[in-house]
Image 1 (cartoon, rainbow, N blue to C red):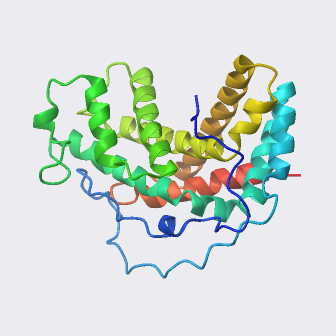
Image 2 (cartoon, one colour):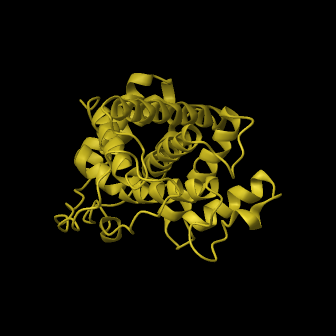
Length: 278
């Protein structure tokens, strides 16, 4: 679980949001027709303000709480760790969600790719996700093709984490829906994949930043894995609740709006995390 690149987290004096995160690519086209009520995209948004610089010892509170959690298994300490992660590690829920802007962009690309496959068409001419080329391929081969098309390797930790998160999400989809056909996913299944991708990507960022503290302080490697799984499950539950809240408010994962909805779900998730900071 997690990644071998986990460390003590980014240092001080660097922007909390890398510059490339604030310049996401446009959302991939979807095979779905626009939902009723969807509007045409408006003019480009104004450039975001400069990201705040990370202060010294930004993860001190996180480390203390996660160290306690790793040793004792106290879930209150785990939640405090997530709270400090959002509040002091990233300066609050809004900046934390902004840091995960790449997650929202990739979610949009994933949703577009899965919808195009379900519609029986390639997302773009010459795409490796041409259903005709994937017909008869195994689930593993189709998942590999989706990962390569949606999040190509670019040498960053974010890309590595997102590629793994896409595969985790699709694997979990096939567990949840054993009869699902990856080439013909229905809207409910595609929404599940997007939600789970979001959760896995958030957890992998968390693990890259501060997961090493759990590995260092847990009494054994087996216990560390158990603690990390529990933390991942907490992220999944929180992200799922955020998407439910948005759905109840009429914010569905409709074509062309996936990235926007995911950004809102990320902000809602980090607001929940931040509420546990003391």
